[in-house]
Image 1: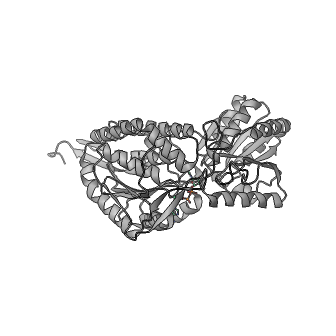
Image 2 (image 1 turned 30 degrees about the vertical axis):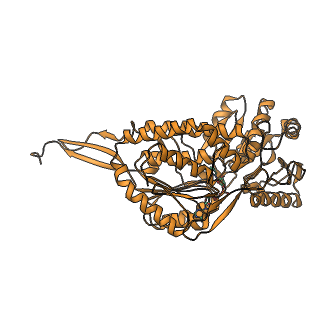
Image 3 (image 1 turned 135 degrees about the vertical axis):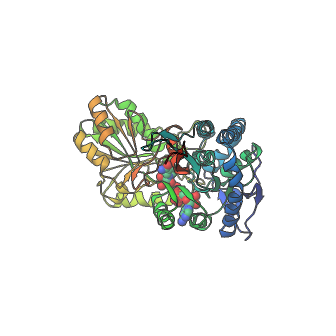
Length: 488
Ligand code: NAD
């Protein structure tokens, strides 16, 4: 078991510090509702101090050759590898997910770190021809300065890695506002980075609430790039604030992702992927599948199989369980309310629908895996992300109707189709209005070297991770070299 401070501090300028106000908040364990630790409640003074520390450290960090920066990031990756179990234990305790899932997530974060560590050798610009004689034209990547990073709690170590590694390899210094529901993962990552030799002040972690520390970071005039993963509602607010000062902004927001089951799909596999899409990580994925769009000719068979397998799901925090609790009681209550409003509005509850109140679950924040049908595609619950284990079944006549319904959403993050028909699969990928399209698998799943992101209310067009994230965290500079100054 990792030893955590009982009052979790910030990391500012290489030091662990507490908020000047001396205030703190409680972080609860989602699987039993007991206190995990207290967390220092930072605000404007701590954000000011973290940004100042980052600005001071960034100059030397930017002057460190990118290859060397990559070597230091690689050292962090090695520390993460050595501490895999420790990180996974913290992730599991903070989120309520199983240790096995937390370990898988930690492995993903390590892969991501490895990818960006190597990018130190590949921070390519472009050299090209010039329209003028005796001239070379080229581009180079330069850091922006201070990166303000704000993350959600659903996959905490992956979310940290997803933003911190690309920001650092580009030569920025970072102020990371930890998610208030997973403060210890960010704290532990900063500790490992510190031990790995990352210079003090290059990575600062500030603990606190979104409306306090988060808002102060977003508004800080010396934060040149803000990268945010979270809800669309908060993303819109941040867009206004960051846009007003024309700073760089990446928004990775919510989704209401569709999984289409065609009449020629392998129904057993489609059910397996539907269950994973809707319920793994307790449905707390931006890429979770929450709309199942099924051809009418296979609707009843698919529904029967899905209900049978949903009834077999095991809910709890153990490695043998299929899904754990949701992150906090507020989220749980919001979901329960939305489902009961949908049922009052005429929707049919097929499974679950409420909090699990039996002895094994009552103290934790457990939502029963929930399936609904008979809901209007325009109803509130069809159009708003719930971020939990809740999915709705819709019946459609054919491919065209399935595609239209998939696209009939305010969000555009991911979509998946199950079919054996090549033309349907390729047409779906071409016409679906999402940033990610998948054939014969789940609505979720991204790789470190691939760009992830969405259209419409799912983002602002930015893509992370992959080499595409380098465009968020670096500025391109055009350089022209006159190779013969004697020539005019
Ligand atoms: P949230 O928007 O409430 O909070 C996310 C983060 O923003 C937290 O760290 C919070 O402290 C901070 N925050 C809140 N208000 C803020 C403000 N006014 N200014 C600055 N920061 C503020 O979201 P959540 O409920 O914690 O997370 C779930 C959401 O995240 C879902 O919508 C999910 O789809 C989304 N998400 C998106 C991706 C993606 O890559 N697209 C990945 C994971 C999660």
